[in-house]
Structure formats: structure tokens, C-alpha cells
Image 1 (cartoon, rainbow, N blue to C red):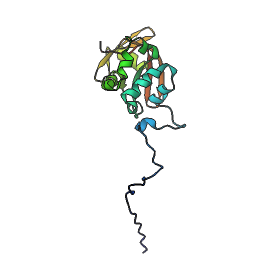
Image 2 (tube, helix red, strand yellow):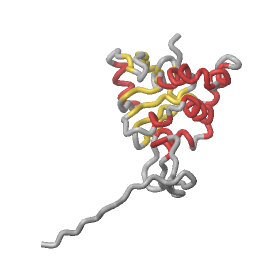
Image 3 (cartoon, rainbow, N blue to C red):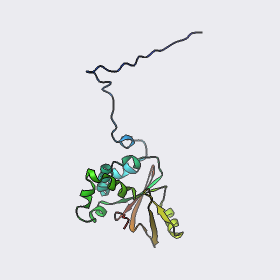
Image 4 (cartoon, one colour):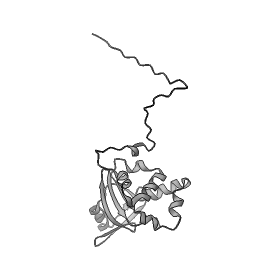
Length: 177
């Protein structure tokens, strides 16, 4: 019988050396991973949308990118740039300040529902009189009027399937009021 032993020495780098020049930093964690093969996740789709630049800036300011790239499923109600522009003057600028990161994260999280709710699922919830449970613990009313579906008072304008859930483009920012 032949035994082969491999001994590795772990010596910390000297004070004037670096451990490796090949170390890659991923400050956004999983949200910074990209490839050209996989289907796009919620964050990747939002980042390519000209109508959602304000939403993406808010997600980055709140530092919740990883929530939108997790395996899911997750349903996100994504306000357009026009929806954010409809808020009182100065609201978005104020929320993007570092000291308001927690408030911003709560507002954005109110736009996410655990689970996968396509249009048929939203209609089903509405027909049963159920409210949609959101990631903040809030419940939002879903209503159907003909072809118009609203969630928390926001009209669903379009639906985009992603690798980890569904994006429903909406016409306003959802509030608790």
C-alpha cells in the first residue's frame, strides 16, 4: 500500500504583501453575479428597463439588491419612473438619503409578495376576497374591474415573468395610507 501525503502550509502574508491580487470583491453579494446564459432575475430585468431607473436607484440606495435576486419565487409590483415622479416634490430625493435607508427599504419591501402571483392568481385572490400578503407583513387589496387589476390601489400595467418570480409594472407607489 502506498500512502501519499500532501502538506500545505498556511502562512499569512507579510505586512508589505497582499494575499492575492486575484481576489474579486462582490460588494453587492449575489446581486453582482451575472452571466450570459441564465434567464434574467427580477433585479436584472429591472436594471435593463428605462421605465424603472428610479426604482433601481432606490433599491440600490436601500441596499436590498440581494432580495430581488434570491431564488424566490417573489412577486414584485414595480412602480414606473412616472409613478415616483407623481409623489410630492422632494419625496424621492429625501428617501434616497443614507439616513432614510430603513424607511426606503420598508417602502420598497411593501411592493414585494412572497410567492408567484401571475395575473390569473391575482384575479383568483380578488374573486375570493383575499388580500395579498406583502413582505412587510402588510396586506393589500386586489381588485378586478373588467381587464383592470389593481393591487393596493395601483393599476397593473404589464407583467414580466423572470427566473425567480414575476414583475407587475404598476402606475403608482403603494403606500399604507
